[in-house]
Length: 358
Image (cartoon, rainbow, N blue to C red; front, side, top):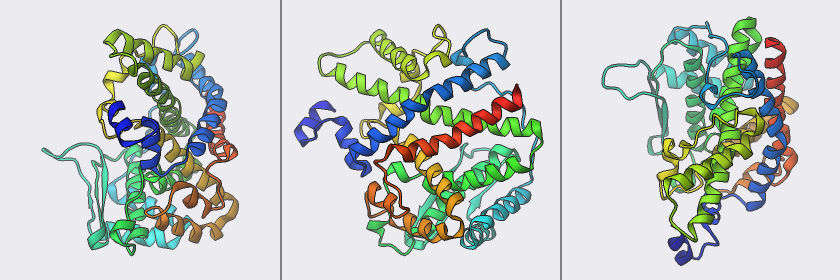
């Protein structure tokens, strides 16, 4: 990969990824700076979780996903659909009406069954101006948020349906914009209605996900950066890869994790590291979360006047770079303060979680 990038004239592997992502280096630097500034808050959450699970100091890596509370909220598919549509309508009639249309016209493969793959997925079919969604709905709250998330992807496709097919493909960093935005609408609504125990479960799941997308992905970015630098001089063996992984985790997680119980084989566990065409397949996820949450923060400030700007922004994602797309919502993607404001929403959730469980 290093040889190919040199032959193609790229300044480096990261440079190629930024070009494919339509992202400026200043945008990446601003986001990373904001993440680094907020890492102590994530560490505070991890240390608090460690106490709740009975650990003396910091959290062992193996307990990162251990649940604090069980979410007892359950739904039939019709109840989940009605809840999602109801909450989407608080944002806009167009989003709610599109969702109703998708549900009524059976665009969603709902139930798990023998021979069906797991997980969830949305495919936007631009030539027929429709989408298809794969779910494995089991009635859990997690699956309700997944329904909202995938329908967000479908709505993104809806906003692009009248663009030419060449202008309908968006880069990975903004692929999660509409999905996370829709998921945020639903999660925030559920939090308002939930009792204390379910609120704790919802908050913890949301913060845990954010910790992965921000802190763990930051560690992956650090690992991959050091890996490419080291690879310029030599081929690395398993022991050296483990050392690079541990160093990256220590820098990202700090005292939030037990330094004797990290995950030296994370580089082996994640397939993201092995796709030669997707180098640095990490920071786009962090950008997607922060960009979407930042837009949601804008919506909370502006109200209904934000909706048409949001729709136009989604429509432009297939033909503009990230800086120009963000500017449509009066956002400077190269400004650290935008990402700090997005991260502040996660920090507020961390504070609520700590208060509820102290």
